[in-house]
Length: 268
Image: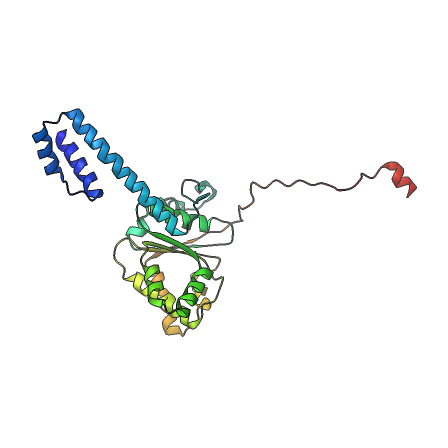
């Protein structure tokens, strides 16, 4: 039992960047003749400090992710029961984050209001909760980000910032056309993320299938072939159906003005 406690204390100490491993803890316990209750108390202190650090890291990651903090989109508040189909289980397996660890990109394609952005945000949030950096932006914001970076000569830092997150989410592909210069920056991001080590995924949402995405970029066919790198290893979810936005909306019909009485009607 004591060996297990020493190991748990050592793991917590290592997470806290404290130079105090399980062997040192065991020696310290022997030197101080610590009882089992005292060792349990030490473990509780280290475990509490570890949990506080984990919470602080997750909070920092969420704050920098650009994901919504009020009314957050998560897998827990996503209604998977709305979806049907033979491959529904693939969708329900998203919370495992297997795509992230397999270096597999994801795309959610379908009409407005079917849950594409919710799923993308939920994935990014789950990554943050596991201590990994996520970053969310719309395609129009990405386009503007590239334009601003070129204006002030910050292309490299801009691209590096988009390569760094383990999970990069680009929402609403197809809402804008990238200029030739911005197209090259976009494909630089794709190329560098393609060779990125560690957990790594890009997530896209769009109303348009990937076979039409070439229309949103301004370059020759040789560079547009780089789009294939996005889907070299990827899972694309095509979601059909009607929008479920406004399902909680209540419609009330009212009339304004004095009611039309029988007398008034006869006089007219």
